[in-house]
Image 1 (tube, rainbow, N blue to C red):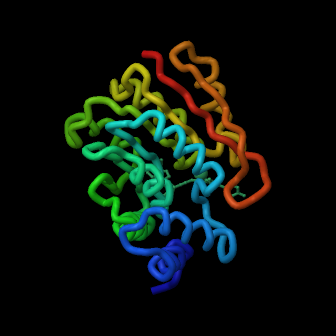
Image 2 (tube, rainbow, N blue to C red):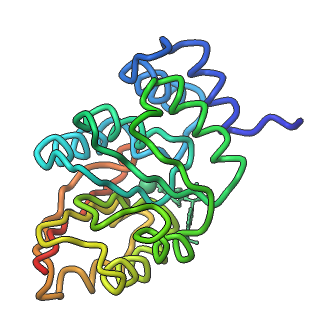
Length: 214
Ligand SMILES: CCNc1ncnc2c1ncn2[C@@H]1O[C@H](/C=C/CNC(=O)c2cc(-c3ccc(F)cc3)cc(O)c2O)[C@@H](O)[C@H]1O
Ligand SMILES: [Mg+2]
């Protein structure tokens, strides 16, 4: 079957990373994307901001929108305390298949539940089907024009607890104008912009961290 970039990325992980060692998986992907083929992972620079937000929050229940190859899934899961869990949503079956293998190569599969399907259908099922009460942390990194509708959906489904943190990738490049306008003007959120760069480049990009006030 035709080789794709995600499959070549997975091969680089299997070749260069040590099974059960999440940091070696993260650096193998960063090396591949820097020296072989650029790919839309959050990357090492924005990734360390993601790490600090997760470490400070110690979330029990986390949601990731847009798994892609599982790079940020591994970054988040490796920092979660025992018993904590990360649900990650991916609607492309080929990407999901690659991500599952990256996640298990890193040895974090016990903390991760990768669900295949569109977020718009899955978010309303979180309570009933996945036994979620509320999320402590949400990482948004899927189609940029879906950040706002999915945030509204999370609100409507009562899935955000007071103090829950939303962290959005790419608020500058490619950009998420409607999401930014909403979240920065809403009295229900306290937002802060973390300036950084588009993964593996010198182009400006950043993460928007927003605390839900209830
Ligand atoms: C339909 C909405 N619901 C969804 N539900 C579940 N999974 C979804 C969904 N949308 C998209 N996905 C998945 O998330 C991933 C999509 C991510 C979209 N990301 C980007 O477009 C992106 C793009 C860039 C970028 C920046 C500059 C460029 F020149 C070129 C690309 C950088 C990034 O960091 C990005 O995150 C895919 O795996 C896709 O299958
Ligand atoms: Mg991104």
